[in-house]
Image (cartoon, rainbow over all chains, first blue to last red; front, side, top):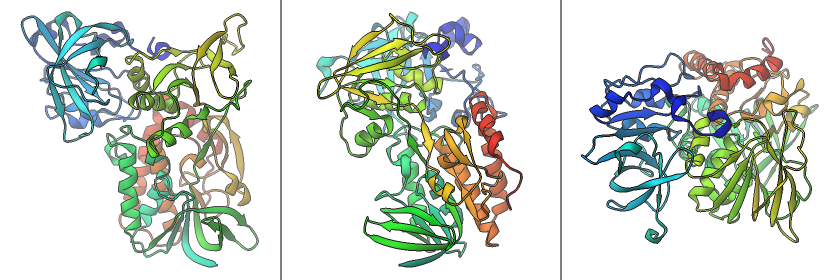
Length: 166
Length: 365
Protein backbone atom coordinates (compact mmCIF):
# COMPACT_ATOMS: atom_id res chain seq x y z
CA UNK A 1 0.00 0.00 0.00
CA UNK A 2 1.27 3.43 -0.93
CA UNK A 3 0.42 4.95 2.46
CA UNK A 4 2.66 2.39 4.14
CA UNK A 5 5.48 2.14 1.60
CA UNK A 6 5.51 5.57 0.03
CA UNK A 7 5.35 4.16 -3.49
CA UNK A 8 2.62 2.82 -5.75
CA UNK A 9 2.32 -0.71 -6.96
CA UNK A 10 1.10 -0.82 -10.53
CA UNK A 11 -2.14 -2.53 -9.38
CA UNK A 12 -2.95 0.44 -7.15
CA UNK A 13 -3.09 2.65 -10.23
CA UNK A 14 -5.80 0.39 -11.65
CA UNK A 15 -7.90 2.09 -14.27
CA UNK A 16 -5.83 5.23 -14.09
CA UNK A 17 -3.21 3.35 -16.06
CA UNK A 18 -3.55 3.43 -19.84
CA UNK A 19 -4.92 0.20 -21.31
CA UNK A 20 -2.67 -2.11 -23.34
CA UNK A 21 -4.40 -0.88 -26.51
CA UNK A 22 -3.94 2.77 -25.59
CA UNK A 23 -0.24 2.23 -24.88
CA UNK A 24 0.17 0.86 -28.40
CA UNK A 25 -1.47 3.92 -29.94
CA UNK A 26 1.01 6.64 -29.02
CA UNK A 27 2.21 8.91 -26.21
CA UNK A 28 -0.07 9.39 -23.22
CA UNK A 29 0.14 11.07 -19.82
CA UNK A 30 0.13 8.90 -16.69
CA UNK A 31 -1.07 10.76 -13.61
CA UNK A 32 0.23 8.93 -10.53
CA UNK A 33 -1.88 10.95 -8.13
CA UNK A 34 -4.39 8.80 -6.26
CA UNK A 35 -4.52 10.43 -2.83
CA UNK A 36 -7.06 13.25 -2.46
CA UNK A 37 -5.07 16.38 -1.56
CA UNK A 38 -6.06 20.02 -2.09
CA UNK A 39 -4.33 20.65 -5.43
CA UNK A 40 -5.57 21.31 -8.98
CA UNK A 41 -3.09 23.00 -11.38
CA UNK A 42 -3.04 20.02 -13.80
CA UNK A 43 -6.65 20.41 -14.92
CA UNK A 44 -5.99 23.96 -16.07
CA UNK A 45 -2.76 23.10 -17.85
CA UNK A 46 -4.31 20.75 -20.39
CA UNK A 47 -4.99 22.52 -23.68
CA UNK A 48 -6.97 19.56 -25.00
CA UNK A 49 -9.17 19.34 -21.89
CA UNK A 50 -8.16 15.72 -21.47
CA UNK A 51 -7.81 16.16 -17.71
CA UNK A 52 -11.41 16.31 -16.52
CA UNK A 53 -12.64 19.38 -14.60
CA UNK A 54 -12.54 19.01 -10.80
CA UNK A 55 -15.71 19.26 -8.71
CA UNK A 56 -13.64 19.87 -5.56
CA UNK A 57 -10.01 20.89 -5.11
CA UNK A 58 -9.52 17.58 -3.28
CA UNK A 59 -10.47 15.52 -6.35
CA UNK A 60 -7.77 13.35 -7.87
CA UNK A 61 -7.23 13.91 -11.59
CA UNK A 62 -9.04 11.78 -14.15
CA UNK A 63 -7.76 11.81 -17.70
CA UNK A 64 -9.61 11.01 -20.90
CA UNK A 65 -6.84 9.12 -22.67
CA UNK A 66 -8.55 9.46 -26.04
CA UNK A 67 -8.09 13.22 -25.87
CA UNK A 68 -4.50 13.12 -24.53
CA UNK A 69 -1.72 13.40 -27.10
CA UNK A 70 1.13 13.18 -24.60
CA UNK A 71 2.27 16.79 -25.04
CA UNK A 72 3.48 16.93 -21.43
CA UNK A 73 2.14 20.40 -20.53
CA UNK A 74 0.79 18.92 -17.30
CA UNK A 75 4.21 17.58 -16.23
CA UNK A 76 5.73 20.95 -15.43
CA UNK A 77 2.78 22.33 -13.45
CA UNK A 78 2.41 19.33 -11.14
CA UNK A 79 3.89 20.29 -7.74
CA UNK A 80 3.93 16.62 -6.76
CA UNK A 81 6.14 15.63 -9.71
CA UNK A 82 3.59 12.87 -10.20
CA UNK A 83 2.92 13.12 -13.94
CA UNK A 84 4.83 11.29 -16.66
CA UNK A 85 4.30 10.78 -20.37
CA UNK A 86 4.91 7.29 -21.72
CA UNK A 87 5.29 6.41 -25.38
CA UNK A 88 5.66 2.69 -25.86
CA UNK A 89 6.17 2.66 -29.65
CA UNK A 90 8.51 5.62 -29.82
CA UNK A 91 10.84 3.60 -32.01
CA UNK A 92 10.88 0.08 -33.25
CA UNK A 93 12.95 -1.28 -30.38
CA UNK A 94 12.52 1.49 -27.86
CA UNK A 95 9.92 3.30 -25.83
CA UNK A 96 10.19 6.79 -24.39
CA UNK A 97 9.42 8.39 -21.06
CA UNK A 98 9.17 12.11 -20.30
CA UNK A 99 9.81 12.75 -16.62
CA UNK A 100 10.17 15.82 -14.38
CA UNK A 101 13.71 16.43 -13.15
CA UNK A 102 14.85 18.90 -10.46
CA UNK A 103 18.48 17.92 -9.85
CA UNK A 104 21.82 19.35 -10.87
CA UNK A 105 23.81 18.83 -12.96
CA UNK A 106 21.22 18.60 -15.70
CA UNK A 107 21.70 15.53 -17.91
CA UNK A 108 22.86 16.12 -21.46
CA UNK A 109 21.25 14.92 -24.64
CA UNK A 110 22.84 11.67 -25.78
CA UNK A 111 23.92 10.72 -22.28
CA UNK A 112 23.36 7.20 -20.92
CA UNK A 113 21.56 7.16 -17.57
CA UNK A 114 20.46 4.53 -15.04
CA UNK A 115 16.74 3.85 -14.87
CA UNK A 116 14.99 3.70 -11.49
CA UNK A 117 11.56 2.30 -10.71
CA UNK A 118 9.03 3.63 -8.17
CA UNK A 119 10.81 1.79 -5.33
CA UNK A 120 14.14 3.33 -6.21
CA UNK A 121 15.57 0.12 -7.62
CA UNK A 122 17.81 0.30 -10.65
CA UNK A 123 16.17 -1.63 -13.49
CA UNK A 124 18.23 -0.83 -16.57
CA UNK A 125 19.79 1.94 -18.60
CA UNK A 126 18.46 4.42 -21.12
CA UNK A 127 19.54 7.34 -23.29
CA UNK A 128 18.56 10.97 -22.86
CA UNK A 129 17.13 12.17 -26.16
CA UNK A 130 15.86 15.60 -25.18
CA UNK A 131 16.18 18.03 -22.29
CA UNK A 132 13.15 20.28 -22.29
CA UNK A 133 12.86 23.58 -20.46
CA UNK A 134 9.38 24.94 -19.95
CA UNK A 135 8.23 28.54 -19.71
CA UNK A 136 6.16 27.74 -16.68
CA UNK A 137 8.91 26.24 -14.62
CA UNK A 138 12.23 27.33 -16.16
CA UNK A 139 14.51 26.11 -13.37
CA UNK A 140 13.65 22.44 -13.69
CA UNK A 141 13.57 20.22 -16.75
CA UNK A 142 11.49 17.58 -18.45
CA UNK A 143 13.85 14.82 -19.53
CA UNK A 144 12.95 12.58 -22.49
CA UNK A 145 14.60 9.20 -22.08
CA UNK A 146 14.71 6.37 -24.58
CA UNK A 147 14.13 3.16 -22.63
CA UNK A 148 13.33 -0.51 -23.27
CA UNK A 149 9.70 -0.78 -24.44
CA UNK A 150 8.70 -3.16 -21.67
CA UNK A 151 9.79 -0.68 -18.98
CA UNK A 152 7.56 2.28 -19.90
CA UNK A 153 5.24 1.62 -16.95
CA UNK A 154 8.12 0.95 -14.56
CA UNK A 155 10.75 3.67 -15.02
CA UNK A 156 10.01 6.80 -12.99
CA UNK A 157 13.39 8.38 -12.28
CA UNK A 158 16.87 8.52 -13.76
CA UNK A 159 20.30 8.69 -12.18
CA UNK A 160 23.33 10.09 -13.93
CA UNK A 161 26.42 7.92 -13.90
CA UNK A 162 29.13 9.16 -11.57
CA UNK A 163 31.85 9.58 -14.19
CA UNK A 164 29.66 12.06 -16.05
CA UNK A 165 29.57 14.51 -13.15
CA UNK A 166 31.21 17.72 -14.10
CA UNK B 1 9.14 55.82 21.19
CA UNK B 2 5.41 55.85 20.68
CA UNK B 3 4.02 54.66 17.35
CA UNK B 4 0.34 54.81 16.39
CA UNK B 5 -1.34 52.77 13.68
CA UNK B 6 -4.79 51.60 12.67
CA UNK B 7 -3.92 47.96 12.06
CA UNK B 8 -0.88 46.29 13.57
CA UNK B 9 0.25 43.05 11.92
CA UNK B 10 2.65 40.94 13.96
CA UNK B 11 4.61 38.63 11.68
CA UNK B 12 5.61 39.03 8.03
CA UNK B 13 5.14 35.44 6.87
CA UNK B 14 2.55 34.24 4.35
CA UNK B 15 -0.39 34.99 6.68
CA UNK B 16 0.80 38.46 7.73
CA UNK B 17 1.74 39.40 4.16
CA UNK B 18 -1.66 38.37 2.80
CA UNK B 19 -3.38 40.31 5.58
CA UNK B 20 -1.29 43.37 4.68
CA UNK B 21 -2.02 42.86 0.99
CA UNK B 22 -5.77 43.19 1.55
CA UNK B 23 -5.15 46.43 3.49
CA UNK B 24 -2.99 48.05 0.79
CA UNK B 25 -4.58 51.27 -0.52
CA UNK B 26 -7.43 51.25 2.01
CA UNK B 27 -6.20 54.47 3.58
CA UNK B 28 -5.67 52.64 6.85
CA UNK B 29 -2.34 53.15 8.54
CA UNK B 30 -0.86 49.66 8.66
CA UNK B 31 2.25 48.66 10.59
CA UNK B 32 3.93 45.27 10.18
CA UNK B 33 6.48 43.96 12.67
CA UNK B 34 8.88 41.21 11.58
CA UNK B 35 11.63 39.83 13.79
CA UNK B 36 13.77 38.61 10.86
CA UNK B 37 15.78 41.00 8.65
CA UNK B 38 13.49 40.11 5.70
CA UNK B 39 9.83 39.42 5.00
CA UNK B 40 8.41 36.10 3.83
CA UNK B 41 8.59 33.94 6.95
CA UNK B 42 8.96 30.28 6.06
CA UNK B 43 8.32 31.04 2.37
CA UNK B 44 11.90 32.24 1.90
CA UNK B 45 13.25 28.70 2.15
CA UNK B 46 10.48 26.81 0.35
CA UNK B 47 12.09 25.80 -2.92
CA UNK B 48 9.33 23.36 -3.91
CA UNK B 49 6.33 24.08 -6.11
CA UNK B 50 3.23 24.92 -4.07
CA UNK B 51 0.05 22.88 -4.04
CA UNK B 52 -3.45 24.32 -3.87
CA UNK B 53 -5.05 26.25 -6.69
CA UNK B 54 -3.80 29.11 -8.81
CA UNK B 55 -5.39 31.70 -6.48
CA UNK B 56 -2.88 30.52 -3.86
CA UNK B 57 -0.05 30.48 -6.39
CA UNK B 58 -0.14 26.70 -6.97
CA UNK B 59 2.67 25.47 -9.18
CA UNK B 60 4.89 28.40 -8.10
CA UNK B 61 7.88 27.90 -5.81
CA UNK B 62 7.37 29.12 -2.24
CA UNK B 63 10.22 31.63 -2.19
CA UNK B 64 8.91 33.21 -5.41
CA UNK B 65 5.51 33.65 -3.74
CA UNK B 66 7.27 35.33 -0.82
CA UNK B 67 8.95 37.76 -3.23
CA UNK B 68 5.69 38.60 -5.01
CA UNK B 69 3.84 39.28 -1.75
CA UNK B 70 6.73 41.28 -0.30
CA UNK B 71 6.89 43.52 -3.37
CA UNK B 72 3.17 44.21 -3.25
CA UNK B 73 3.12 45.00 0.45
CA UNK B 74 6.27 47.12 0.56
CA UNK B 75 5.21 49.21 -2.43
CA UNK B 76 1.96 50.31 -0.74
CA UNK B 77 2.29 53.80 0.74
CA UNK B 78 -0.01 53.09 3.68
CA UNK B 79 1.98 50.08 4.92
CA UNK B 80 5.08 50.50 7.08
CA UNK B 81 7.32 47.51 7.71
CA UNK B 82 9.70 47.32 10.66
CA UNK B 83 12.25 44.53 10.22
CA UNK B 84 14.34 42.96 12.98
CA UNK B 85 11.60 44.02 15.35
CA UNK B 86 10.09 41.65 17.88
CA UNK B 87 6.70 42.15 19.51
CA UNK B 88 7.85 41.19 22.98
CA UNK B 89 4.76 41.80 25.07
CA UNK B 90 1.24 43.17 25.30
CA UNK B 91 0.31 45.52 28.12
CA UNK B 92 -3.36 44.96 28.79
CA UNK B 93 -4.20 48.02 30.89
CA UNK B 94 -2.30 50.51 28.75
CA UNK B 95 -3.31 48.61 25.59
CA UNK B 96 -0.06 48.68 23.66
CA UNK B 97 2.45 46.23 22.24
CA UNK B 98 6.03 46.63 23.35
CA UNK B 99 8.29 46.13 20.36
CA UNK B 100 12.05 45.76 20.43
CA UNK B 101 13.81 46.99 17.30
CA UNK B 102 17.28 45.66 16.43
CA UNK B 103 17.76 44.54 20.03
CA UNK B 104 18.13 48.10 21.30
CA UNK B 105 15.24 50.45 20.52
CA UNK B 106 11.98 50.01 22.43
CA UNK B 107 8.69 51.15 20.93
CA UNK B 108 5.22 51.48 22.41
CA UNK B 109 2.96 50.48 19.55
CA UNK B 110 -0.65 51.66 19.87
CA UNK B 111 -3.21 50.26 17.48
CA UNK B 112 -6.93 50.04 16.81
CA UNK B 113 -6.88 46.43 15.59
CA UNK B 114 -4.18 43.80 15.64
CA UNK B 115 -3.58 40.71 13.52
CA UNK B 116 -1.37 38.17 15.25
CA UNK B 117 0.42 36.06 12.63
CA UNK B 118 3.41 34.86 14.62
CA UNK B 119 3.58 31.36 13.14
CA UNK B 120 4.81 28.25 14.89
CA UNK B 121 7.99 26.77 16.32
CA UNK B 122 9.43 23.30 15.88
CA UNK B 123 8.78 20.54 18.36
CA UNK B 124 11.59 18.31 19.57
CA UNK B 125 11.78 14.70 20.68
CA UNK B 126 12.93 13.12 23.92
CA UNK B 127 15.64 10.47 23.60
CA UNK B 128 19.05 9.69 25.04
CA UNK B 129 21.76 11.88 23.54
CA UNK B 130 19.38 14.31 21.85
CA UNK B 131 21.67 17.22 22.69
CA UNK B 132 24.65 15.96 20.65
CA UNK B 133 25.94 18.34 17.99
CA UNK B 134 24.63 17.17 14.61
CA UNK B 135 21.01 16.89 15.75
CA UNK B 136 18.82 19.54 14.17
CA UNK B 137 15.22 20.51 13.68
CA UNK B 138 14.15 20.16 10.04
CA UNK B 139 13.41 23.88 9.85
CA UNK B 140 16.95 24.68 10.93
CA UNK B 141 18.36 22.38 8.26
CA UNK B 142 16.18 24.02 5.64
CA UNK B 143 17.27 27.49 6.75
CA UNK B 144 20.97 26.58 6.74
CA UNK B 145 20.72 24.94 3.35
CA UNK B 146 18.27 27.02 1.35
CA UNK B 147 18.80 30.43 2.88
CA UNK B 148 22.49 30.46 3.75
CA UNK B 149 23.85 27.78 1.40
CA UNK B 150 25.39 25.74 4.22
CA UNK B 151 25.15 21.94 4.25
CA UNK B 152 24.29 20.61 7.71
CA UNK B 153 26.20 17.35 7.15
CA UNK B 154 26.90 14.56 4.69
CA UNK B 155 25.05 11.54 6.03
CA UNK B 156 21.54 12.20 7.27
CA UNK B 157 18.70 10.32 8.91
CA UNK B 158 15.31 12.04 8.93
CA UNK B 159 12.88 11.50 11.78
CA UNK B 160 9.28 12.07 10.67
CA UNK B 161 7.54 11.50 7.35
CA UNK B 162 5.12 14.40 7.45
CA UNK B 163 5.32 16.88 4.59
CA UNK B 164 8.21 18.76 6.22
CA UNK B 165 10.24 15.57 6.73
CA UNK B 166 9.61 14.45 3.15
CA UNK B 167 10.21 17.85 1.54
CA UNK B 168 13.40 18.55 3.50
CA UNK B 169 14.68 15.04 2.65
CA UNK B 170 14.11 15.78 -1.03
CA UNK B 171 15.84 19.15 -0.74
CA UNK B 172 18.81 17.48 1.01
CA UNK B 173 19.04 15.08 -1.94
CA UNK B 174 18.91 18.06 -4.31
CA UNK B 175 21.81 19.57 -2.36
CA UNK B 176 23.82 16.39 -2.85
CA UNK B 177 23.55 15.09 0.72
CA UNK B 178 23.14 11.37 1.35
CA UNK B 179 19.80 10.69 3.04
CA UNK B 180 20.10 7.24 4.62
CA UNK B 181 16.51 6.74 5.68
CA UNK B 182 13.34 8.39 6.84
CA UNK B 183 11.90 6.86 10.00
CA UNK B 184 8.29 7.27 11.05
CA UNK B 185 6.67 6.20 14.33
CA UNK B 186 3.18 5.90 12.82
CA UNK B 187 2.17 2.87 10.73
CA UNK B 188 1.68 5.06 7.63
CA UNK B 189 3.51 7.87 5.88
CA UNK B 190 2.34 11.17 7.36
CA UNK B 191 2.74 13.56 4.44
CA UNK B 192 1.34 13.69 0.94
CA UNK B 193 1.97 10.48 -0.96
CA UNK B 194 3.44 12.36 -3.93
CA UNK B 195 6.18 13.80 -1.70
CA UNK B 196 6.96 10.29 -0.42
CA UNK B 197 7.04 8.92 -3.97
CA UNK B 198 9.66 11.51 -5.00
CA UNK B 199 12.16 10.38 -2.36
CA UNK B 200 11.30 6.68 -2.69
CA UNK B 201 12.12 6.55 -6.39
CA UNK B 202 15.46 8.16 -5.60
CA UNK B 203 16.19 5.12 -3.44
CA UNK B 204 15.48 6.49 0.04
CA UNK B 205 13.78 3.94 2.34
CA UNK B 206 10.93 4.97 4.65
CA UNK B 207 10.70 2.80 7.78
CA UNK B 208 7.27 3.10 9.39
CA UNK B 209 6.52 2.04 12.98
CA UNK B 210 10.11 2.91 13.80
CA UNK B 211 11.48 5.52 16.15
CA UNK B 212 14.83 6.67 17.49
CA UNK B 213 15.95 5.11 20.77
CA UNK B 214 19.22 6.93 21.31
CA UNK B 215 21.90 9.00 19.66
CA UNK B 216 25.49 7.89 20.09
CA UNK B 217 28.71 9.87 19.77
CA UNK B 218 31.65 11.24 21.74
CA UNK B 219 31.71 14.93 20.96
CA UNK B 220 29.27 14.87 18.07
CA UNK B 221 26.71 12.56 16.51
CA UNK B 222 28.28 9.37 15.11
CA UNK B 223 25.38 6.92 14.94
CA UNK B 224 21.84 6.35 16.05
CA UNK B 225 19.93 3.37 17.39
CA UNK B 226 16.41 2.87 16.04
CA UNK B 227 13.73 0.57 17.38
CA UNK B 228 10.44 -0.77 16.01
CA UNK B 229 7.10 0.13 17.59
CA UNK B 230 4.14 -2.20 17.99
CA UNK B 231 0.50 -1.36 17.27
CA UNK B 232 0.26 0.34 20.68
CA UNK B 233 3.30 2.54 19.97
CA UNK B 234 5.41 0.53 22.46
CA UNK B 235 9.06 -0.21 21.71
CA UNK B 236 9.66 -3.84 20.73
CA UNK B 237 12.81 -5.08 22.52
CA UNK B 238 15.27 -6.86 20.26
CA UNK B 239 14.39 -4.80 17.16
CA UNK B 240 17.14 -2.23 17.70
CA UNK B 241 19.25 -1.32 14.68
CA UNK B 242 22.26 0.94 14.40
CA UNK B 243 22.79 3.42 11.59
CA UNK B 244 25.87 5.57 11.17
CA UNK B 245 25.19 9.22 10.35
CA UNK B 246 26.65 12.63 11.10
CA UNK B 247 23.32 14.44 11.11
CA UNK B 248 19.91 13.68 12.51
CA UNK B 249 17.04 15.82 11.39
CA UNK B 250 13.88 16.02 13.52
CA UNK B 251 10.68 16.75 11.63
CA UNK B 252 8.19 15.91 14.35
CA UNK B 253 5.72 18.72 14.09
CA UNK B 254 5.18 22.36 14.95
CA UNK B 255 3.54 24.20 17.84
CA UNK B 256 1.71 27.56 17.45
CA UNK B 257 3.61 30.52 18.94
CA UNK B 258 0.66 31.82 20.89
CA UNK B 259 2.39 33.64 23.78
CA UNK B 260 1.00 37.06 22.79
CA UNK B 261 -2.52 35.66 22.59
CA UNK B 262 -2.26 34.53 26.22
CA UNK B 263 -1.25 38.08 27.10
CA UNK B 264 -4.30 39.40 25.24
CA UNK B 265 -6.27 37.06 27.53
CA UNK B 266 -7.97 35.40 24.59
CA UNK B 267 -9.84 32.19 25.39
CA UNK B 268 -7.23 29.51 24.70
CA UNK B 269 -7.67 25.82 24.11
CA UNK B 270 -5.21 22.95 23.76
CA UNK B 271 -5.99 21.16 20.48
CA UNK B 272 -3.53 18.43 19.54
CA UNK B 273 -4.82 18.37 15.92
CA UNK B 274 -3.76 22.03 15.57
CA UNK B 275 -0.36 21.55 17.22
CA UNK B 276 -0.94 22.96 20.73
CA UNK B 277 -2.60 25.94 22.39
CA UNK B 278 -4.65 28.07 20.00
CA UNK B 279 -7.05 30.95 20.53
CA UNK B 280 -10.76 30.41 20.03
CA UNK B 281 -11.95 32.39 17.06
CA UNK B 282 -14.92 32.93 14.79
CA UNK B 283 -14.92 31.99 11.10
CA UNK B 284 -13.64 35.49 10.28
CA UNK B 285 -10.53 34.92 12.42
CA UNK B 286 -11.47 37.25 15.30
CA UNK B 287 -10.55 35.96 18.76
CA UNK B 288 -12.60 36.39 21.93
CA UNK B 289 -10.60 39.57 22.62
CA UNK B 290 -12.42 42.10 20.39
CA UNK B 291 -10.14 43.63 17.78
CA UNK B 292 -7.57 40.82 18.01
CA UNK B 293 -7.44 38.66 14.88
CA UNK B 294 -5.27 35.64 14.12
CA UNK B 295 -4.02 34.00 10.92
CA UNK B 296 -1.60 31.31 9.85
CA UNK B 297 0.11 28.66 11.96
CA UNK B 298 -0.55 30.53 15.24
CA UNK B 299 -4.25 29.82 14.68
CA UNK B 300 -3.52 26.12 14.08
CA UNK B 301 -0.62 24.47 12.26
CA UNK B 302 -1.43 23.87 8.58
CA UNK B 303 -0.04 24.47 5.11
CA UNK B 304 1.14 27.88 3.85
CA UNK B 305 -1.80 27.92 1.41
CA UNK B 306 -4.22 27.96 4.35
CA UNK B 307 -2.12 30.60 6.09
CA UNK B 308 -2.44 32.86 3.04
CA UNK B 309 -6.23 32.44 2.97
CA UNK B 310 -6.53 33.06 6.71
CA UNK B 311 -4.36 36.17 6.35
CA UNK B 312 -6.67 37.50 3.66
CA UNK B 313 -9.71 36.78 5.82
CA UNK B 314 -8.17 38.38 8.92
CA UNK B 315 -7.10 41.46 6.93
CA UNK B 316 -10.56 41.92 5.47
CA UNK B 317 -12.16 41.42 8.89
CA UNK B 318 -9.90 44.04 10.47
CA UNK B 319 -10.69 46.50 7.67
CA UNK B 320 -14.43 45.84 7.98
CA UNK B 321 -14.33 46.44 11.72
CA UNK B 322 -12.84 49.89 11.00
CA UNK B 323 -15.40 50.52 8.23
CA UNK B 324 -12.67 50.92 5.64
CA UNK B 325 -13.00 47.80 3.54
CA UNK B 326 -11.10 47.62 0.24
CA UNK B 327 -12.91 47.35 -3.08
CA UNK B 328 -14.82 44.11 -3.69
CA UNK B 329 -14.09 43.02 -0.13
CA UNK B 330 -17.28 40.97 0.13
CA UNK B 331 -16.41 38.95 -2.97
CA UNK B 332 -12.85 38.33 -1.81
CA UNK B 333 -14.04 37.35 1.66
CA UNK B 334 -16.55 34.89 0.27
CA UNK B 335 -14.04 33.39 -2.16
CA UNK B 336 -11.40 33.04 0.57
CA UNK B 337 -13.81 31.42 3.04
CA UNK B 338 -14.98 29.03 0.31
CA UNK B 339 -11.42 28.13 -0.70
CA UNK B 340 -10.41 27.52 2.90
CA UNK B 341 -13.43 25.33 3.48
CA UNK B 342 -12.69 23.48 0.24
CA UNK B 343 -9.11 22.80 1.30
CA UNK B 344 -10.35 21.25 4.54
CA UNK B 345 -12.99 19.08 2.86
CA UNK B 346 -10.87 16.12 1.73
CA UNK B 347 -9.57 13.24 3.85
CA UNK B 348 -6.29 15.11 4.41
CA UNK B 349 -8.32 17.94 5.97
CA UNK B 350 -10.09 15.65 8.41
CA UNK B 351 -7.65 16.28 11.25
CA UNK B 352 -7.88 20.04 10.73
CA UNK B 353 -11.69 19.91 10.60
CA UNK B 354 -11.74 18.00 13.86
CA UNK B 355 -9.35 20.52 15.44
CA UNK B 356 -11.25 23.55 14.19
CA UNK B 357 -14.54 22.21 15.53
CA UNK B 358 -13.03 22.58 19.01
CA UNK B 359 -12.04 26.23 18.70
CA UNK B 360 -14.50 27.85 16.33
CA UNK B 361 -17.04 29.98 18.15
CA UNK B 362 -20.04 31.67 16.59
CA UNK B 363 -19.26 35.32 16.15
CA UNK B 364 -16.85 37.43 18.12
CA UNK B 365 -18.00 40.67 16.49
